[in-house]
Length: 181
Ligand code: SF4
Image (tube, rainbow, N blue to C red):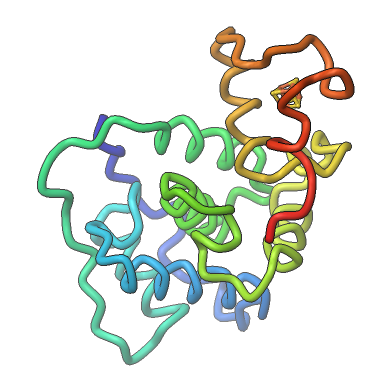
């Protein structure tokens, strides 16, 4: 399904306060990664005003067009976008932008930090713990982030994807855990 067009919660970015450096890094990297792979839209789930406000706050001076998908995409973007927004604390403009950027990148094929164009997994773990603390705290075993999110979505949907009732005994343990290199 196509993502909904979201309206801005607050049209004034952070009440004029400078944005947090990690927030800025993640959004800038996500935008750059989308540009590199030719994604259209660059960031899904944001309406034109929200996208323009994000660019004005995060990449001022760059005239970016979000673009539109040529055809409907059937994936888990909306579910992940909603999941992240449910756990964004606070759910302010930056929380929505980050949710959109992360859920957009997560539809690609590599480790999530790579899909987002981040320097390493560390920045991804930091932004998730800082901005989405309640869901990040559920990843007690340090599961690979993309695997973790999709496990969360499957559990919510009541769809069993795991081959074992617990991770310790699972033949897919190395797929879900371990270094994301
Ligand atoms: S290790 Fe096995 S049980 Fe644990 S999340 Fe992965 S697939 Fe599921």
